[in-house]
Length: 318
Image (spheres, rainbow, N blue to C red):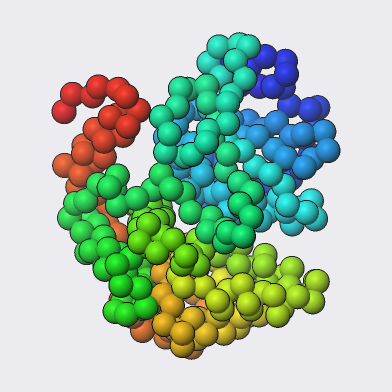
């Protein structure tokens, strides 16, 4: 139980749903990633297992878990439970008796005891983009390490479906690839609110393919993905060894390019370095613009820290 948490926040004895989820993530994530971001999470699962609240230590970790792992957690929990599970992220209460409040928007300034809803129900007649509105070009620190990728992303967000299609961004963990993708989507929606933009993790696409098979709903699946104006898909290396998923993504890829929609992908390596991905798909990945995200130089790291301190309302001397 997180320090200072009152009895009403305690986990049920043996929250098997979350424990099973953690064990699955331990198998699929690199050990360092798992130990840093997933293992420290504390979970409160509702009695009916329809919702789960995950507690993190601070706002930075909350934003990071939300951006990097929310889609995967949602897909995994849905697969385990057989129906969608509502996920919320909250800052661990530092003093007993204060229930975290739900934030209205991810970008609102919050006290440490406030929570951020990860999976929101979409408003009626609106397309659910899964974008994190807190991740934009304004708060993405620019440096030598990401200048080319940022410039390409800005161009895509301003003129989707034209140059740099697809845009393939690769690099190690924590270099800002996901932030850049959300920034593209948020900029496009700011300019064109009617645009159909979708951000997903590759594992979510795999899950959607599986569900379409199980429920025999491929027409709905194709309509959903083939009608997009912008598809942002994270970590395409997860398509490895999933032949039918690769086939369906190839079909979606061709359909989107044919209607001049834009595709942005990220990976931990460049297209031709991907293992166990069909050659024709690798060829499509490499057919637009491929840019790398490098580890930030010292000055950029300092700027990132200062910007983060400002956003948290703290003063950090250079």
